[in-house]
Amino acid sequence: MPTEGRPDSDGPDPPGPSETDRALAQLLEEWRRQDPEGFAAFMERGGPPRHGRESAMRVRSPALRALLVVIGLVLVVLLSPVPQWVVTVADTIRGTPTAPGSTSAGSPVTVVPPATGADGRLAPAVPVGGAPPADRYAFLNTQPGTSTPVTWDPCQPVHYVVRDRGIGDAGTALVHDAVAEVAAATGLVFVFDGMTDEVPTDQRPVSVPAWYGGGYAPVLIAWSDPTEVPELDGSTAGLGGPVSVRGGDGRWTYVSGSVYLDTPQLSPDLGFLGRGAVQAIVMHEVAHVVGADHAADSSQLMAAEHRGQRGWEDGDRYALAVLGQGTCGS
Image 1 (cartoon, helix red, strand yellow):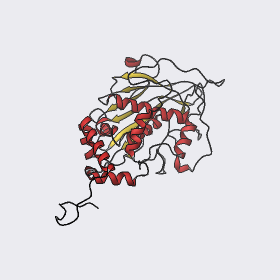
Image 2 (cartoon, one colour):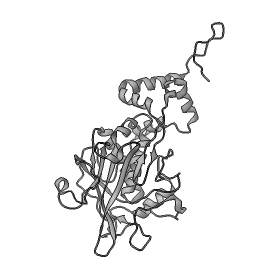
Image 3 (cartoon, helix red, strand yellow):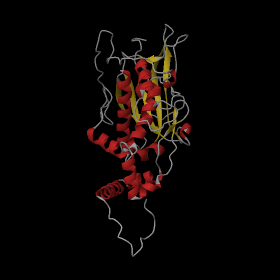
């Protein structure tokens, strides 16, 4: 274990830095040079985020000041089964699939993919396996008098727009990646309708004709802050939920929704060591929009607290697959 102070002058010379030490030091220096604000923010923050109350996510980040010492970084690399910085870099290099029909940040999509089968679905349904224990999944709403969850219409695309609020292309690309994960797990088709300047509200109506004309409003995924959305104050990093309408047959169907993300809390984590954690937060909130509720089991991504999860677990996958099995025309 390294200690502070100079070595005894009559003792053996301390060993020089290893190749790993030098490589990590160079990596840190390059990051500090290219992104000084992000580097400084990382040195003051760290640790896994936590989910808060229903449809909200909280973040509590202890300081990681030991990372200022190169030997501390070496220990992190040696003790982590898959170092998060390696995962982050690899994800950036190989790229991540975008949601069906979506494009790069700022480019609206107008083409909806054709139905794939006689049932009218726009994408194949995700097979639903055996149900895991009940504490591993939950649904936000069920049809009156039944245990059947309220869902989106799988024969209609889920339109969404993104509001920037200073997050930049990196944050918008991350939203696309998170939406793609939900699309793949549900079999629903998401269509990116472009960027928006719509201001988040706590009671967003089902239709916003001033922005989007007639019809149901697209899902609004808005980077924001506590000055606009007071619920984001403190440690709450995200909010999400759907909007439903009731048809003539009495069935409820989701037709719109909102996700509000706290830019000040999340933007410093989009770079080195943090992108996976932020994407997990966005995935969690978009999963609320399609109808998933918090799971009691803490191992699930939809659990109320985040304990390092970076992807769907068995209960999450089951719930999302079921939520993709809605009735066409509902």
